[in-house]
Structure formats: structure tokens, C-alpha cells
Image (cartoon, rainbow, N blue to C red; front, side, top):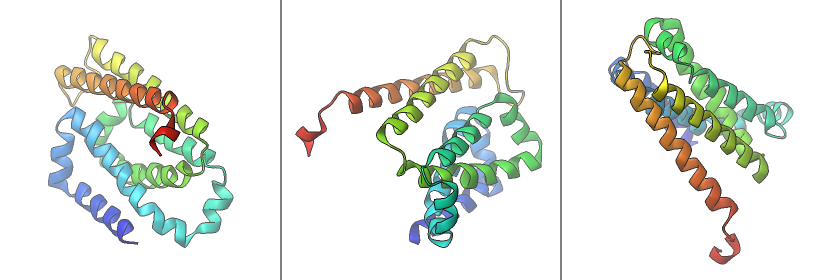
Length: 185
């Protein structure tokens, strides 16, 4: 239960106006630090909800597929440039971000991940690799400013962050799929 409390504390700290304003002031920090930390806070809080509502999770997310699909949909939504802009301009979108990432992405991720097969996990990694390569190429190569609240250089930096993340996921997938784990156990 301690980790649920840590997740709640992390969410509260991330929601503090000075912290939120700082993390949202730089595009790459907004996308690659604040948003994953919000998902992580939900990931930590998930244990509380799993213990409190076990039949709900078993009935709703027995195989892990519905939860991982919800996680993927929320993550796709929050990588759309217009969504990031609206978060900075519309208070209700900011509130939705602080609700959806922990509770609609972080909690389902934790509940689903252990239920997925290794093939399912690899498919999730493969999906995010393709998505990050595509988003990276879009942010780097589009000659116009996609987000009104950020400079074009911030956009290019975020694009390179997406590309770097995609390359790291590829390296991980190669490592996992082409090493003999029995030699290291």
C-alpha cells in the first residue's frame, strides 16, 4: 500500500501549478517527462484499486487485452500536437490530462502487463516503436509549427526524442528476442 501512497503523492506534486508550469514550458519535458510520470503515478496507485475492486478487474480485464488497448488509445491521444496545445490553453483539458494519464493509462497498464503473453508484450513494444518513429519523423520533418505554444526548435527536439526512444525500444526488442535467457539464470 505504500506504493499507492507514493503514486498519489507523485500525482499531487505533478499537479502543483509551479511544477506543472515548469514541466509544460519545454515541449520535450512536457511529452517525455511529465506525461510518463503521470502514467507512472497511476501505475503505482493501481495496486490499491486492484485490491479494492478485484472482481471488476478480473471481469473487465481478465486477459489484459482491454486494459492495454485503453492504455494505447490514451497514449495515442496525448501524442497529438493539437492535444498538447489545448492542454496549455484550456483548463478542462489540463484536468483531463491529470485524470486520464494516471487513471485511464497507468492503472490499466499495471493490471494488463502481467496478464499479457510475451508475444503480446512484444506487440505493444512494436506498436510504440512504429508510433514513435512516425511521430519523430513528423515532428522533425514537417516545415511548419505544429504546436502554437512551442517554438519550432522545441518541436524538432521532441521529434529527435521520439526517434531516440524508438531506437532504444528496437535495441531492447533485439536483445530480448535474440538472447538465450537460460545462460543468464
